[in-house]
Structure formats: structure tokens, C-alpha cells
Image (cartoon, rainbow, N blue to C red; front, side, top):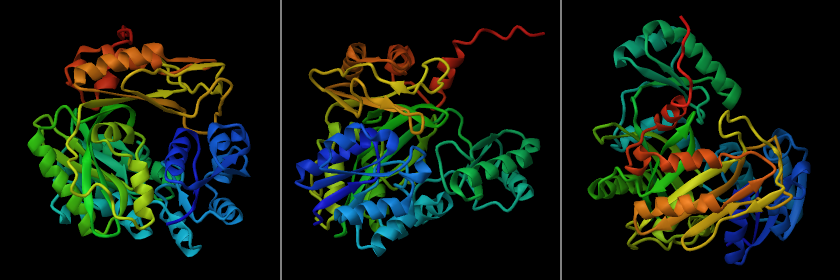
Length: 453
């Protein structure tokens, strides 16, 4: 087992990992840019190293600076968190060559599952349910021919990334060539990989994802599933566990498939297999995330598991402590992401937090790096805090979350707290009748009617 962990990240996930390391008796090293010098993860770590300026390409994404920081401090493991280099196989490979444990899957597994086309091939071979789709497209003409064969509407997706970049919905044949060019250009700019592929587009699906954990001894378990349908531009806003739309029999069936997928491909560490659910309740594989997810706390609360601690332990060669445990969900958990954004226009709202009060009470957890006087820089993701609640039922969890959000105070910047309250108050959400179109439709209801013509 390693003794000192460098956390190659910032913000709330860096604080989350620090806490897990401290409870495991591991020393910690924080890295930070010049604008994060006073950040909470820097204050809580045993050691801290400045790795560059605010531009993430010259700090948190700069592999030589991270490796140098690990070598200078004697860190023998690196946890990448999420975002930044967390799914970068080259970074994992460099760690291996430098004999530093990368707390995550192997570079080979990251390449096999991280590339979306390769992941589809893996999923198909393993018998996971699939939507009709293609391999990498050669050009716009190839895309058009494949789209006609699949049937409209279709969606173009970047092979090397996600988050909505390189993603275009196409409903008419005439739209395909331009959409292909745009998607490929976005993929190249965002992921240094212009490859795109096609998939049949589902109207108003639900987004369901399954959390897996696998160790280096052949053990793999599915720790449960999450409903992540409340999204804006493919970015999740609110998540819950278990998924209210998934029958217990389907949870058990899919859990076995997900665990088998990890074992059959030699995958180790945390991972998440994401699926789309059509209105008839059928699930279709979408992609795999080879890292800890932002929304992991809802699974932790319903399964009674510290996923980050388990991830660290299995990276050190330990057998997981979950094999043979009853991981059936206990109660219901909801997570709300509080972002530093205007709740109406979604314009970023960086600045100094002049006042901050986190909610508390029974069943409430807040993962955050915020405090009065903390700076929210314009250089990074706008996440300020994750408010997570657990209760015995979904109805009770909604009531608890509404109470928690009403208690929360963030002053000095704008946040999405008003929007989150609106979502919780909406009858469709309260009844569990949501899809990935829910938030868009909610926001469009605020727009005045178009009276042109």
C-alpha cells in the first residue's frame, strides 16, 4: 500500500479525496495554481505545491508539473479525481513509468472504454443492450449513408469525449453533411480527436447509470444505479438513487451484466456504465466513465459505502470489502449541484464568496470547498457545492432537500439555488415523470411567446 497521495485536482473533489485519505491514514499532497493558493484543499492537505498559473493547461493539465510535484514530495500515488486528467490514458501511463500508483483503471482499460466507439464494441460483445449505431465515420457522405440506414432522427457523437461537445442531433438528411463537419471540428478542438460516430437518437429518454467497483483479484460488484435525467446541455444538474423508474428485477439483471462487463475486460477501480431508457423502459448502453463520478455521494448514502476509500484501497492491491455484501438500496438519496451561475441566463458568476452557510440536520451532507472569503475563479468549473440528502422514501428525500436548499446561503456571487428549488417544486419531478428534456422544457415555459409575423 502506498503512503502518500498527491491529489491532481482542486475544489470539492480534492477535499473529498483528502478526507478519505486522512481516514485511511495516508498523507496528502495538494497541488494548486496561483489563483488557488488560498483554496480549502490547499489548507487541509499535509503538503501543498504550486504547479503553475490559473490557466489549467499550464497547471492542472500539465503532466510534467504534476509528476515533478509527486517526485519532490515523495508521493507514491496520484488520485486524479474527476475532470482534468482523470480519464487521460497518457497520464496513467506516465504514472506507471514513474512507478507512481495511479488511483484509477489501467491505461489499457481507459483506452478500451474511454473511446466511445471502442466502448460500443466492448458492450456489444458483452451482450449489453445497444442502440443501432456505427463505427467511426469517414466523411459527410459516409455519415449520410449510415444515417439513412439507421433511420432519422440520429445523433452524431465524438468518439474521444463527451459533455455535449461534438454532439449534434440530426432530423433531416439535408442536415447531415454540415452537422458532421461541425461535430468533427468540435471533437478535434475539445479532445484532439476528430472522430465521430452515429447512433439512433431517442426522444425524451431517461438517463440511468450503474456504479461498479472492481479489484485486482477478479472481484467486481455493481453498487447500484442512479437517475441522472435532469440535465442542461448534457450537463447533470440533479441526481438521485435509486432510479425511481427502474424495477427491482431490472436492477438485479443489469447489475449482474455490469459486474460481468468489468470482470470480462479486466477492469479495476471505480467505473460507471451509462444507459438511456426509452419510454417503454428499455435500457440501451451509451458510454462508460472510467473515474469517480460527481454524483457518487447518492450511491454512497443509499449503499452505506465510502466509494472513494474503496477506490483507494483497491488501487493499493487490497481486496474490496463489498464482495458478498447486500448492496440493495436503503432509502432514497438526492444530490443537487449548486453552481456559480446566473439561475436565468446561466452566465458564469465568478468572484469572492462573501457569506456562506451550509445546510445541516438529519440526513444532510454537503460536499464543498466553499467558505466565507473563498474565491470562485473564472478559469475552472463553476461547481460551488453539492447538497446531498437521504431519507426513507423519495417523497421524504424531496422534502428534506427543499428544506436544506432553503437553509443554504451563498452570498457575493449568483448561484443556481433558485433553479434547483423550482425543479423540486415541479409536479412532474415530484411524481418521478422526468426525461433528459425536462429542464429544457421547464426553461422554455418561462419564455414569452414568439409574436413575430
